[in-house]
Length: 323
Length: 236
Image 1 (cartoon, rainbow over the protein chains, first blue to last red):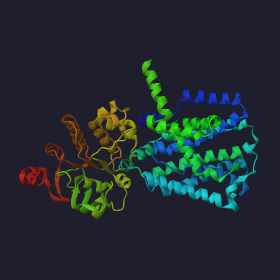
Image 2 (cartoon, one colour; image 1 turned 90 degrees about the horizontal axis):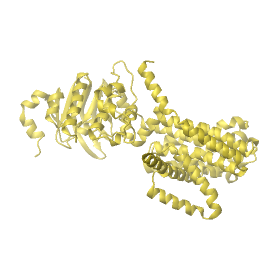
Image 3 (cartoon, rainbow over the protein chains, first blue to last red; image 1 turned 30 degrees about the horizontal axis):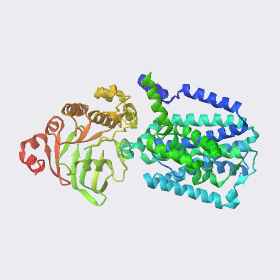
């Protein structure tokens, strides 16, 4: 390695390094809340963390790859069912089956992604929707194998028998590692390729990048991490249901990304926190909490298209200017 | 011969825009394509790199191999660099990130450009390396676009109207860079309207009219015959 190569490599590593000033305090806050809060709050936090990972995987496609997927729940569902079926039908020990769920989701992403990346824009979105509906229908109808609409329950003790707080801590560790991996990917040369193809696939091709291949790799990565989220969710409830692959989960993810902020890595995380908190607390006050959600979405689309992350960045810039 | 195009035909959808282009570029040679707006200069370049145009006939041989059936990125990886007319920088990426997008192809017969070398060619880019490409001036974007294409390590560089829409001083800097590249031995096809640029850069000239090659010859031959300019370049 020449001196120049070493310099370039160091620069790449520096760019890919996460700002620990934000990560460490955030982890400390989550751990402290988990330690002090009730078990129901710990469960809610676990769901938030899982959905943050799911939304962040979708965010990789939407914000960086400019690929709007209407079927990302398919990989959440495949992760959940990959894990569950490996235990129930394959006789794989649950601890080992944890790895099966994400791999099944990634395989699904490879198969469906190869089909979807052949098209762009709305046609891409429609193909992702079609693939997700196929997945959902198979899970819903194949009673002998997937349990059909009743899903699969009772095959394991939820959370591997861990307490709510214990499982929340474990999920925090897994989700943190996954988000760091996603961050590393976004900041890596591959991430740069994903962003370049997302912005202008023709120009990226004219620079020697195989646009479809780059998009497919992004699709598989996103499917893998959605699969991790699905697996964690399945362990949380000790069950798997076809709805995990349904349109509702996809829409939740899309809303989270938009609320949290497109074009920002943190968008998926913020979106999941805001969405889940709204769903939990506003629904206690107003039965039609979706009405509030709709109004918030309307306000964001009209007044702050960069979402919460964009607003907070603007505030930080303003405060910096005042100082 | 580095590139040989014979009887090239190409279409956008059902509309055929090239009806028979013949063109040759030798090693280290700079060839200028000239002609009025809309006669097929850009389409010829797009056909070589398969950039959103369908080649419907003819043959393109590059480095002794046909480019038939190749996709754009495969053509680029074979050693063709392309700087489109509209530059198409990645607006939300920084200059440095734009320069890191191309994947250089390592080959013994290819000059391997580094980011430091393109910064030496275009010092302004080094000064603005952390700036978002979308907020740079047209001239700076053009320099970035050329620099980025060099990082694909091309044997042949296609430059489509490289100083279209640039201020005269900036345009002159871009032409200086083209001359510097020529000195480095980079083969180029330059689509050009400015006669001054042709005089400074070109070894040979091809005149294109209505999707066909209608004249080709040396730069001296081109200037020696004012009838060519009158017939094929002046607005009628």
